[in-house]
Length: 409
Image 1 (tube, rainbow, N blue to C red):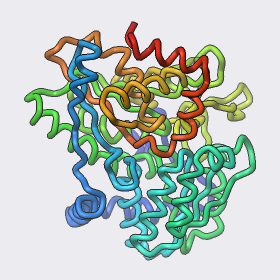
Image 2 (image 1 turned 60 degrees about the horizontal axis):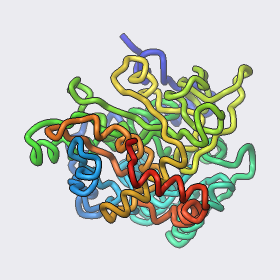
Image 3 (image 1 turned 180 degrees about the vertical axis):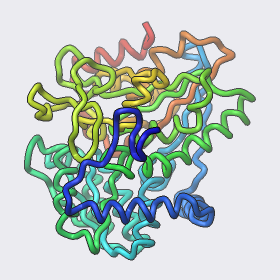
């Protein structure tokens, strides 16, 4: 029997002694809440009245006809409050923070969506809020920084290391060590020490619960495939969760292929041969690391996927073969954003567009009786400058136009 917090050989809680009592408290409160039907009722009530759930499952007729294969549905987490799936997790952790009697929350953020969601939750519940964000991400996600600050949060640019998401996580943990009595760390993805992977996946499972009901209502059958982007893994775990037992449904996680898997300028852990098993930031999983265990630099056009590790739950599902992992390059991702805008009037976030890119490559392989679901985990407003720069670049523009003519070719 596996020890609690482990998923085959991944997971665990590798903690400094000073944090053990804090994690014991968090685990106890989480499991008490998880076994309390009133807690889930209150959570769903808030998500309904405050965050507009359930989010729709949108049938995309134009894209379906464009590819000529399976019917394409999109789970619209971009319509969740703050524009991404992140609200699902932070509202849940906000309720836990209140149960623990703490008055301050801290968080890390990459693309800024988790930071905005945490700042929004803090305003809603009346908590003080500090957000740690890599200095590189502060510059490329300036609109989200503005909103975090307007919501009352203090945004701390992290200048150490490579100045991206992993460095923001490190700084958040340092803050927590010094402020455990008053502060809860609202970790944003299904990574980190136990109970965070299980806890974040549980709150995000609302996506899959809704999607299952919606696709059965629309089609009378389950989808052939479900696609989700994978950074840490929270949106993927959220939509995959309700389909694990349905072996006829292929689950496809799409990582950041960056400038190509042959370049090492990517952030693909499970879709590449560049990652190895290690222990960092309190848990065991696949990391992009060198032979000495030092974390390697990563690259992605999408700040939210630019992370060296991956959920231990997804690492286990990869090894068991239940989830297939692929990678999408920066160019394919921007092309997918452009095509989705032109065909459906939808603007997926660059992170979400990794799932779109892979789904577009495979859609024509399916029959007209099949359906697929793509999880649009966030909206692309935040990426306006990055996408605009890419569309103005003459080489990228030529590539994107060619993709729009025959994406699956």
